[in-house]
Length: 138
Image (cartoon, rainbow, N blue to C red; front, top):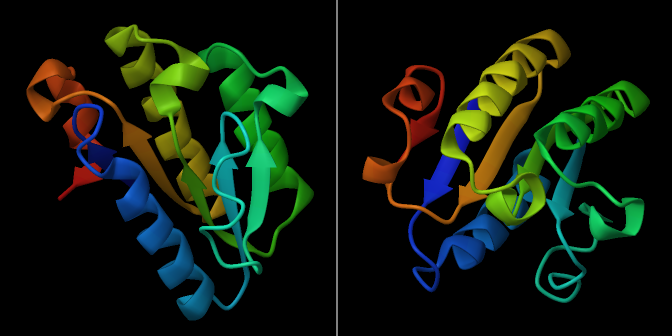
């Protein structure tokens, strides 16, 4: 399952993501991972969530981002939730590439049995409609 938190900059996406991370930690019977571009959420999320910074691993672009998330899934089968902040800052602002990336993540989500939550700094109307055939939003 993929869930998107969408909206322009300053609309509270990261705050919602923090709420999702902390709720996932409380409800999960496994491990929770929070992925961010740079280390900003250290003091906002529950210490039991694993915080991973993509800048530390030089992840740029959607191909590298997909490989990175696949590696996280392969490395720990006890992960139940992977929550990602600043998706467009990590992968890029090309919405068609984002859609292709999310299609691949939808398959990964099923195979690995993981729930993914992404923040996307764009209004829903700006994103390709095909994204919403396999992604949920509020």
